[in-house]
Image (cartoon, rainbow, N blue to C red):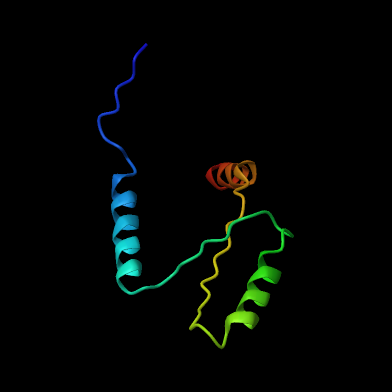
Amino acid sequence: MEIKIMKNVLDRNQNKANEVRHLLKEKKVLMVNMISSPGAGKTTLLERTLENLKDKFKMAVIEGDIQPIEMHKDLKSMEHQLS
């Protein structure tokens, strides 16, 4: 069986990412995205990096939490609400 990809569903995301990269490069801004398991040391690394470089660079932190979706609980809740 052959499957043809007619359109990449992530095109809009990729286009937006390219715009952001271009803008950051134009403004000479370095952005770092840190993702790893809880307890891996992201916060410690970030705190020490900020402390060591605070007099050399302007820095900012954008924080976002990604939590696992517990589908079975959501589905049970929806099932209960519908019955």
